[in-house]
Amino acid sequence: MNLAMIAHLGPPGTYSEQAAFFYLNWLQKNQGIEANLSPYATIAQSLQAVATGASQLAVVPVENSIEGSVSMTLDQLWQLDSLKIKLALILPISHTLISCATSLESIQTVYSHPQALAQCQRWLAQCLPNVNLIPTNSTTEALERIKQEITTATISSSRAAQLYNLPILASGINDYPENCTRFWVVSQAESDADYQTFSTSHTSLAFSVPANIPGALVKALQVFAQLDINLSRIESRPTKRSLGEYLFFIDIEANSDTASMQAALAELNNYTEILKIFGSYNVLPISH
Image 1 (cartoon, rainbow, N blue to C red):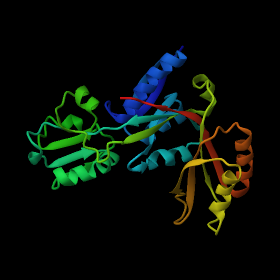
Image 2 (cartoon, rainbow, N blue to C red):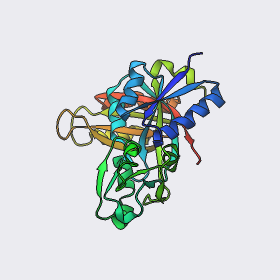
Image 3 (cartoon, one colour):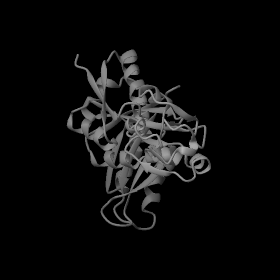
Image 4 (cartoon, rainbow, N blue to C red):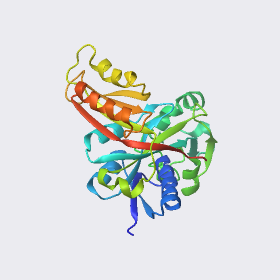
């Protein structure tokens, strides 16, 4: 059997890699599938690798419990028609401040992914109120420069500090201790059977409405309410066509194969312009 390639946001040490590594082990243990990890510079490139066949799977962040949805993941999933969600992974997130500085007072610049900076904003305002905050593509992108620049720091994971052999100056700096990120495992639609052999509990989809008129969204959502189907998330994203036009992303607590969901999806077609079903899947928690 050929090795499956799992794309994820790199460089090594990111939370995405942590989630991907967990999934790699889960695949081997539960389905006997061998896989290798393949880091990419951006989330978009990770998903595009699956769309082009360079990787069979991708593990990408979709939502953080503190900062909400990851827009790049949602936008790419809408734009790349061939992708399907196979599984959701829930990873607890605990941020550390990694630096070769001798003290907090000597730090002038902090690098990290925008989500990580936002998840630690209260701690940063209290402990490092005068530093420059510089966003990067990932929580590990700036780690290589830490040894050369002793007035800089990066917000990343304790695992990343171990991988790069760098000191941790402060631990558990995220503003809320119950911080976790949901990841989606994504593959090309036709390869689903290779990796998924169990019944599912969640479905994700997105749609646009024909026109921005009163009741357009309500009519679509009432389809689920009338069939007693619970929605666990709804979010709007710009269509990127014109100001004021939106797509709506919905997570549903039901399998798309059930009779009620089949009826709902058939009815939903009457109230949507474009409807994309990203897949049905289970949710797998990752313990530390």
